[in-house]
Image 1 (spheres, rainbow, N blue to C red):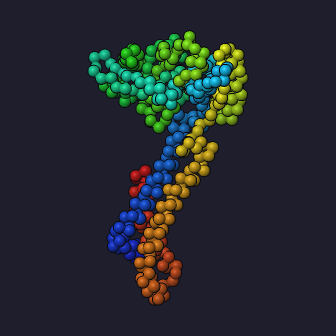
Image 2 (cartoon, one colour):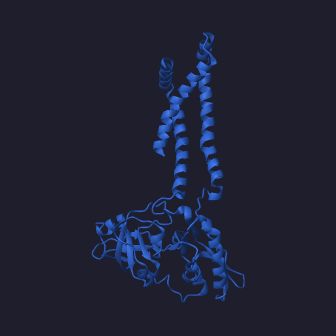
Image 3 (cartoon, helix red, strand yellow):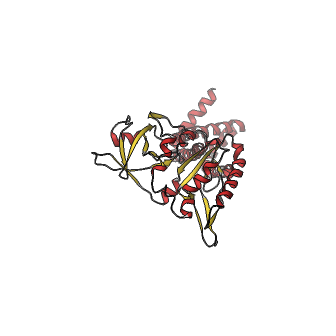
Length: 360
């Protein structure tokens, strides 16, 4: 033990004598550790059951379909339209529940902004909103601080009710208990029925500041629009399965429902409606290949810095060859020299590892 303590003291003295080498070593180790930790955390956030998305292991998604005109000269790839949702998605019997929401992707690219205001208060913040059905609150488990979600009857009748996040309630009305009060969304009055805990922006299937029934949006409920406009639109289906093994059965049921739906169409047909399980992507790589992608990232973030640090360490050892030679001449065994160098590197790696964990 005395010998090991001596090695630590020598290593500490060497660190102080070679500050530039020590700094580069510590920073290199810290960056490698922090990048690996960030990758692990992102993977966990995108795939684990995290409230309110507590059923990710049983979720499947349909966020895009293709509508092909009969002439075959044009195809529309978009989210789900209101008629398609009613006549296809909501007829599925196999799933436990189906949450219908506005698609964050199409909503973003189409630039549909919404401004919130309160009478008598001179501010109109641009809010992040999500339109959804009543089953949304069954599929996802939000923590309601006050009130409750809008009901199925509210949804079916197109009642203008809204659920606010805690921070949005405080921003608009100065407090959190705002049940029964009204706000204006794009100058349309909505009654607040519930207030929930804030949702992390990393949870893209549930993140918003305000949630409202999509039946309250007249622009989305225009079923007299063209056949294509009511077939494709801005909605997506988040499907809660009884068991993840039910996915093939749901897909088969969906295909049968699409066949029936296509018989009612005149101008075109629906194709390529595929239900996807919970996915995680790294640089466009899906979850089926995620482990290979993670291994590649680990190789880049650990092996490359390790090689660089090894080269730097080898150069540092070369400068100490005289010291090592003298110690060998006095009978120091190879194992003793190895243990000393190992402890010196361990002492250099420890602060870098701690710094990397804190930084990540």
